[in-house]
Image (cartoon, rainbow, N blue to C red; front, side):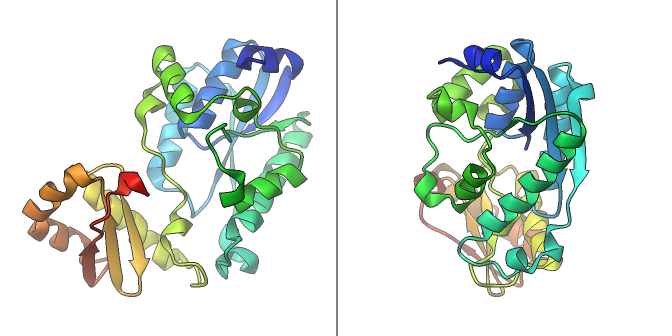
Length: 252
């Protein structure tokens, strides 16, 4: 089955939309296939501000602004999430897709889809279990499309997301078992934004106590050393101490 055939079998769907590579291509493919699709972006503290802007841009670029619904979700009001257990993503997905399912049903959509692809390892993603329990369909996985397939197809379609770096939610920057707070999420987001303004990309700043652990692709290490003072000045308001992870982020 290819993606067009999937939408022929499922002509009316609600999409859990993040503005990332996978869900953006899925949104585009559904519109191109003539499906009745409504995309739901759940806006909350775990998403960086640029992700929301990217989601809006994708909808504009594919001429589907009127098919995008933004929902607010207060994930920090749920202790199962803020306590940050090893399977936090399970509880978070339940909350997010439960919210989408409820809103979609009110809008007349009963089939829910997401951007999980054939490269994703379900054994390493507790959130996949939640999606399975809620009977969320993953068209890209069903059609055997890997991450590289999706990037190639996105490039051919002219989507700006084709080479967008993967960007897991901000909560992943906080160690398992440490309470998640808005203050910690803000520190991580602002620190990462500061690094992007200095020219870095495909990066992470992970909270390790009072230390901000910077993770970069190996080819950016030399630039990080040469800009050490600028990095310290830019990130000091968020982390009193900084460290550079010498393992290539691309190998993680």
